[in-house]
Length: 283
Image 1 (cartoon, rainbow, N blue to C red):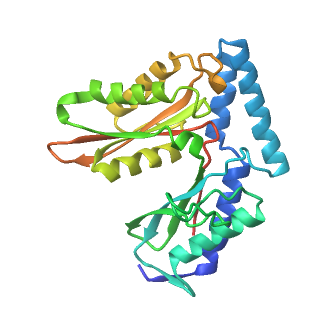
Image 2 (cartoon, rainbow, N blue to C red; image 1 turned 180 degrees about the vertical axis):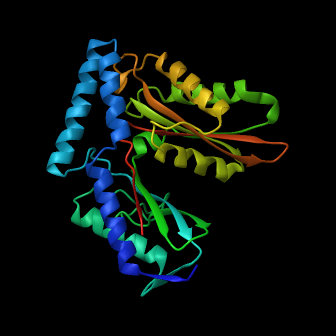
């Protein structure tokens, strides 16, 4: 396979469109889950909230305005072909320029501060983006982008379980995390679970899990079953849409896993509100 050159500007244009699209257009997986939940929701108040969420998402798409005022931090998962060379710039710079243009030209709220503790001065363009890059074989770049709001991000957690906890320990930690979050992350939520790897790998897997369509399942039947069990238990908690009660606390639970050390079983939970925004493109 020959080396392929991609202009930095092509990366910028792609990233800009992805962030504008994901903020304006809710995914078919989320919309489908919302509409299905509306038909099954047993609470009149919960049903009314779901109707308002669905209406909001449709208006956002029609008017090309954000589905939520918190347009989030810019998160990207990148599969970068090892036969790709970026011309006229560097990849990360091109990505951040795309984010900058999207948040400025798309009238998306800028929510990033340059220093996390002391100064907390807004960067005024929502950069820098959080970029997770995986080198793969090939001559293309696949970018999956999403804006992650912090009402739900703040409810996330990680725990370094040991193997003795087993699957029941994993379930307990996930359910305890969601129960503790309660109505704060704007339910109905999407729950991403990362299991394995190391401390930071588990967290990355949990975030990646929230980017996966909720109408898919883990390829391993054991984890697919666990996804369904957790979803069922979460929806029994009764927080319901907007935390006002009902049977729809979560729209989906996605689990991603990775090999880990013989002495460990890290588990991370990343919670996302119903505005679970993500879009993908291949350059």
